[in-house]
Image (tube, rainbow, N blue to C red; front, side, top):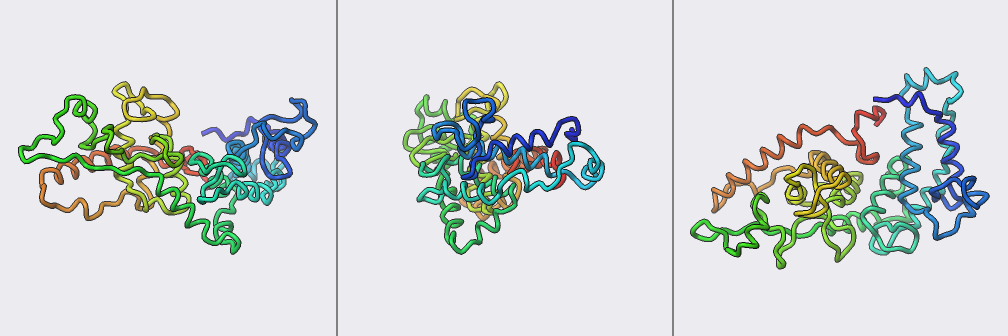
Length: 326
């Protein structure tokens, strides 16, 4: 991959430094290109939420996490990075992230706002990239927060029911529309009014969405707790959102787009790690041997397909072999 030697790292990092406000957040635009004199003058309604925090810290991490060989080669160069911590105030950034904690344990985009799957990932991934996640989670003044956060994330997965078979082997529901909606969905109902798919939602009482498989699933992955969700059910939901045209849509039956295709595949990659989709006793042969055989065959095919995906750096949301230092 590109070693980034052609860019002026110091200039970019200096710009990031100017974008950080005293409260630790980051504004979207350099104050010199706006009506403001410095970042702290940017008004509250302007963009300075956890999305920009995460984007700034990801750029900072990539540009300062050079391997030892690159550091040696750049030691006498004009764009040498001296003291990566000098470019970001890690303490104030950490405090701002923590100020976005909502009462349920999740993180809102800004202080006082509702917890959300996307902003929660941005905050937790930022703490990870800053290298303070473990320290924060072990702080005495934050005792119990990790458990609340994990509980909130796990509860964002909707329930799923398997398709029942009648004694003659046909589906219990013979309604043509229902059967049409359920075709080619690996034996699961996905659109009945009285049944919900096993996708992730970004907030309570919202609809499932494939991108939250990564935002929520990735947060749990960074907290070493992805084994607490029903990984196989979430895999099934994401796979039902594939389009016959290629790619993944936001929900079942939606047209595919690049964003949801990327985050669907990102989650599928993560699902191979940390015991998220380990086989359990549900796969042991029971009363309906035919269904068990079908499910085991399906899972084998899914494992083989997902196993071909490259390993992902969860906090950065990019191929792990692009960043050899992690």
